[in-house]
Length: 491
Image (cartoon, rainbow, N blue to C red):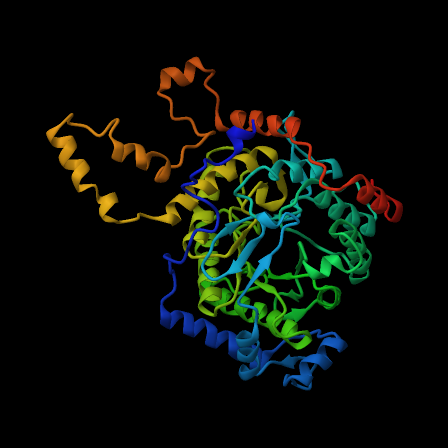
């Protein structure tokens, strides 16, 4: 089982391939969007600014407009960009699984807060549970193209908010050593959970020395105002050295302009406001510039995460962030499909490839999510992992060298056997240049029928079950597990 799931010794398409070849915006358009964002911040500013943040922003040059809004002058915004962390490491508890964020390297991971799970047995949605969260976490632990893991579902069977935050983090600690991410409902939950992280890290203060979990926070409520609870969480995360993804998630036509250019300008302004906030608290603190354009169907108000507009907006967002030199986070592969069907495959492939080609450093929501982010699926995780390999192969491109051009091989084939089968040039390219999927079916129709005529959903269902039956990691020692359970209500 492990051999089948593992990548080949010579991996033709590892994570971290270079993106950036797809540029939906011209240089002039990038400048126009950026200039508009700066005008919004300087002239309109942000509303509902918590008093502590207002004082910190004022101390570095922000101004009040006298009507409750705080204005961010262009030089201040540029200073925040200049001093921002341009690259940093997202640590795994296993250092070999750490990844570097920034530049033009592309990594797929997870996000979302699905409240429903696509059941492996009934193939119907039901409320997500804490057991689902544990199972999703250990399933993705063996999937090499999930570069980091954010809890993908909410345990709806844990009603207490503190218990929910605690048990979410425990599920991640117990079941994976990849870089992880979570969210904190309230700032008061951060310090106690850091105690749990310290236990897993080896002692008091150990987690802060090498943080292996980041926080997902949305400190801006569109349009252009702060959310006090989220801002409080930002302060606590910085105090405990927890890296952050500050996420802007405006919706076109609802909380941001319906025009794509106007949407990008407002959304960029809001994410820049998060960056200035972090700069005011601690310059250069690790922050993923997570500008996530979301689209709704303006006829009905339904979420449209699998749309062409989502694809181009998130690609443009990645381009903007990279143009500013900031570590970029975007959200793609958010299919609106409920079933594992043609709509699912089309929407995930379209949106995730666009974001990768544009050079999104961290592509959230790209593994396991279905039903417009309301659902998470075990089958989707294994299918998406294979899809990401194809995407990485496309990003890798074509290496043009004298050897690869194969002049001598062509001469030998033409003057010899008349084909390239079995030739040394072919053997050398076979593993180096090609990715061989384990789920996609390439048999001819008769063989496919004789083998049961299985569709992708059925194949992925079998694979997910195999993993869940065989992979039961225990990444906490008995002593660590006991210490955590003595302090916290682990359910």
